[in-house]
Length: 322
Image 1 (cartoon, rainbow, N blue to C red):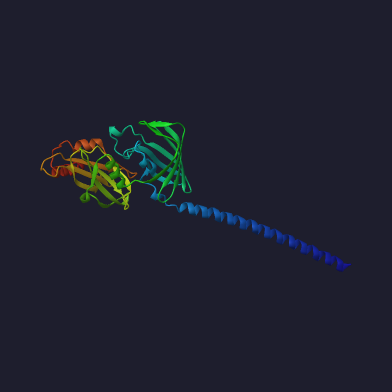
Image 2: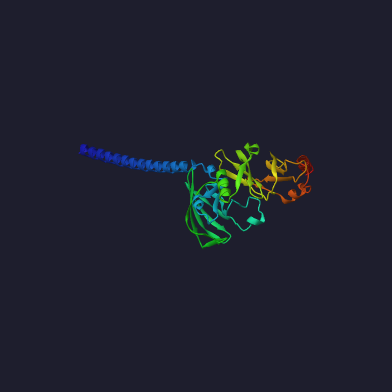
């Protein structure tokens, strides 16, 4: 009798041990599943974080398809910030890229840029698009060589008799060669000024290349760009430069002593001792863009017929007392 009771007790203990072991196995499986899921999430985050967004910002992108259409202006894209929770940029139309961070002069004032603001999702960007006479959404797919954009507008848009519709656009980097080709299409030649084109380090930009170009039309004028090593245009200095003057001096220095390097361009007539000499100063702002201060331009260029040496002296003296 006692033996049977002991036997039952042993069987019960074994059964309890079996149940406990099954529970532990199940818990371990759940924990392993949680760990696996967490690892997958972390891996996805790592992949997303591995995307180098810096290659897309501070660079001018042109719509590739507009090159084959002579009856429309080019469509340009510029992204000045690409972060996981914040994307900022602009889309704008023109024969040459003009945007709000450039110097606005009246002939281009009707070419409004459209702002885009959104967020990053992996290798794509989802943004709201809004501006003069246009609102909608744009999705941008990012890869190493191109940005593909899918635009959905809330209404049809016409700018300067050019119809902007919902479509898929393919943007590629805008280059110095594009500038030359665009002017050549208009029957105008360009000359790259080697003596005023060189590599330089600008504090917020790092190593870039400053390019000076002369547009050889019946009213010849200069053009200035910041590019990378591949001649892709990062920035264009824009101002209503005077016609018929040569580029005589370029310097990069913190002119207004705010801790940011500025760009000084002096234009003059190399062939005469006295001629029209004009100084342009492009002040760098905190976001890395450059702007022209009208009041400074007026003060520096009161004496239009200074020699180049006198103009340089005037510029230095002006900021010593500021």
